[in-house]
Image (tube, rainbow, N blue to C red; front, side, top):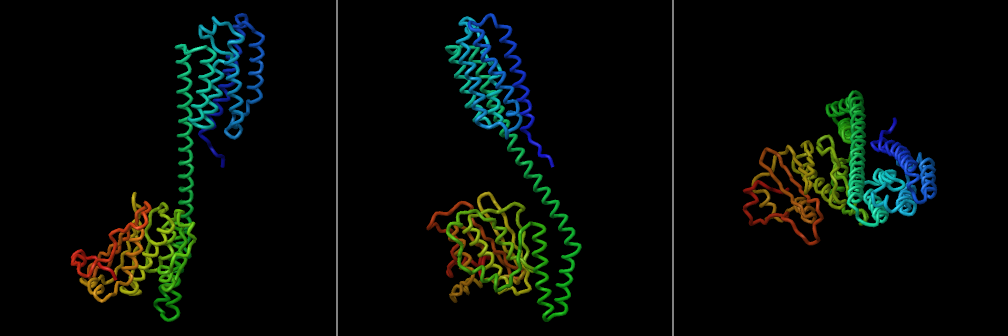
Length: 419
């Protein structure tokens, strides 16, 4: 597939511009040959300019060939021609605003900087050319200032347009890649749905109906079915794990190297392994980045919430994980279809000294500067909202996620509880 570039037409136009302006400069020299003080000196420079333009014809045909060394050399040839003009031309002609030896060929050198390096390179090259022209005229003549200002503005504008075009090209290329990947994923999903997923679903149903060891086989087939669906739909790998493995992962201490904590981590990849036949994950289509330590702690809190669902709502209870990437924070909601939390259970648990997983979850979120809220009603399941700010929280800062006191009656009034 041929790669199209928005810059290539600009390089082609610059190549044509250099050739045409060379012919224009040579024409001016021929017409003014008898007016020069030293026509042979002017002719020598024009010969050098012609040879240089011919030898470097291919250098301005693409961004790869147009190197920084060539651009500096091209600009040097133009500046030398400007500064050489007072030595070969008469003072009266210079005072009248007669074009310099390279004339408008000089703009081609500046445009090369603009196309190659953007508006900053263009501004630098234009400034050098302006200074050379002011030295050549011996002062700030009005017509010279107008011409130089036009060259400076035009080159900077072209450089800025080139930068915008490059950014647009990168965005378009990325969009095309995503579209191609999405189409391929949809094709794979269709093929897999018509074959592998249907077989796994049948194994899951038959295993549950037969019972015994076949039920365990059906459960494993169900987990593989969910993992495969997640893989073809989001690209996230979800290896199946048993309940004890999930609980151990949720409560295990952080053993990653300290240096990795500062690196951003996609929260989706950490939550994907926690899905299964009874757990559904809904996440944004784009990565949800958090600092590695915060992402691991939040994923561990989600794991603890799922363990809580299995322990209090039963192994057959279904759970849903919803990930929301907000401008200033990441919110993860864990909802189940269990019996809910009876009113007053939190206060009873605190009086008995049984804070359980709720304190572990709140403690993790408090250390991250986030919040954890339980919303439940008898017979309507339980919803846990875990919120973590994206900005790092200074050490020692505590958010309002501490477990409520046993003497605080608002815990029951708000319908918030922990298990």
